[in-house]
Each structure stands twice: as C-alpha cells, then as structure tokens.
Image (cartoon, rainbow, N blue to C red; front, side, top):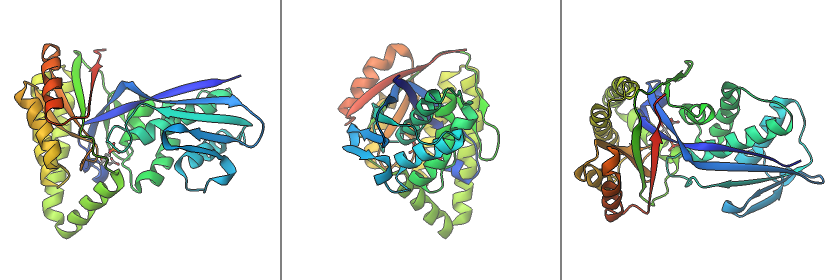
Length: 309
Ligand code: PMV
C-alpha cells in the first residue's frame, strides 16, 4: 500500500529573531503551499527520492546529519518500528530558503507519512518535537516556532519553553506573500544577529523586547479580527527587524510597494536577508497590491486567507 501525507508552509506574522531569545512570536499556516511525502513499498534498502534537489539515494548511503535521512531515522526510532522496506518521494511547492518553513514542512510530511504507514497517529506535539530535532541540523539554534505552527497547522502564539497557544481568529484575514527571489539561509541570518547582539547586548535586547511586545499586541488584534491595527503592528515590527540588520533594500522596496498600494501593513517574514515579505490587506485591494509587488521585483506572489473560527 502507498501512503501519502503533506504539510503546510508558514508565515511568521510577528516576532522573528526575538523568538530565538525567548520572546513571543505569532505565526500562521499557509495552507496552499505544501510539502508532500509519498511512501511506496519497495525492496530493501530504503530509498529516498527528492527530485527538487536532485537526490536519489539509499538511506544507508546518506550521512547521519543529512536532514532528510536524519528525519527518517529519528521518526523510525520514535515509532520504535525500524526502517520499513520502502521508497520515499518528497516534493514541495514551498520555495526553499525563503522564510516560509520549507525545511520544517518537508520534515513534518515525512513524520506523518512514516507514522501513517506504521498505523500510528502521532499528536501534533509529538510531530513538532521530532521536527524540532531535525530543525537543529538545518538551523543550529531554532526557536521551535516553525515546527510548532506547521505541526499544528493553525495560528499560534509561541514562546520558547512554553506550551504553544493555539489562536482562534474572529474574522478572516487576507495575506499576500511576495518572494524577493533571493535565497537566504536561516542559519546565517540568525548567526549574524547573534554576533551583533554579542557586541552590543543592551541595544539588541531592547530591540528584541520591543519585537516581543509587538507580538503580544498583534496577537490581540489577530484574535479580535482587527486587520488595520494588526497591519500597523506589522509595519512597526518591520522597522525593528531593519534595526537588527535583517532587512535588505530589496525587501524594503517590496514592503513600501505593498503599503503604497493600500496594504494595512507589510513586513519581511522569517529570517530575512532575502526570502519573502508578507502584506495584510482588504480582499478588494489584493489584486492591486499583488501587481505593485510584482512591479517592485517580486518573482512570485501567493495569496492566503486565515479563516475565522
Ligand atoms: O527563515 P525561517 O522561516 O526559518 O524563520 C526563522 C525564524 C527565526 O526567528 C529567524 C529563527 C527561529 O528559529 O525562530
């Protein structure tokens, strides 16, 4: 029998980088962008196929710290099943290295498909923990926000070391995600912030604290379905992310274009130094803002809606 599973991408609405230092963040799923895993029975050995990255390899030939191989081994260990005789194919429409959680989504899809094939249904918290272990290979010191929002696939208020708070939203929210086309590795953006924090801890801790405070304020706006004030909070967060040195002229251009075209707010999302910006807008303005973003250099623009619950 062939098993299939998928996992969503994610957007950090507020709080990136500061979340690594223990401050809160708000993140939401992007249901339409997905990583997919298909597990088909095969003769041994276990084969991993990831056409997007040109990978076809027996699991046993991949190094222990290869993130895909580590994810398979870690999940099998968690399930206590051993490695099945199977062929695992992974595809994803989430652009990699662009702040949309591609790595965590691929890992989540793998955990889900392996547990389904073992006849087990893992709780989101269990999936999130396994994916966090894989994220440490990708990122070194992940906060845990990506694996949490993707494993739960619902808006979350996240703070390191605490149970995530799953958020209920009072009114639909309409978002555009615009890709700058510049790949950026989370690890190097996070390392850069850490170096600057170490050389000026007082200034950076103040910036982190202010970013965290915006996450607290924005959480309320999101829960209450207040798009306009949430947009203002996003704008303020972008300014603080600029101050910690993770924006670029290209990202600032996209953010400005979205605001000028009528977005309630716009900011970079994820690690920055490339990747994506997110804009919050009234549904009737999305078309115009999308064109403005493309005109300002976005190589792709996605729409996503957070439904009220
Ligand atoms: O670039 P992404 O999507 O992996 O987001 C990283 C978010 C950071 O706050 C910069 C790092 C983290 O581990 O939370």
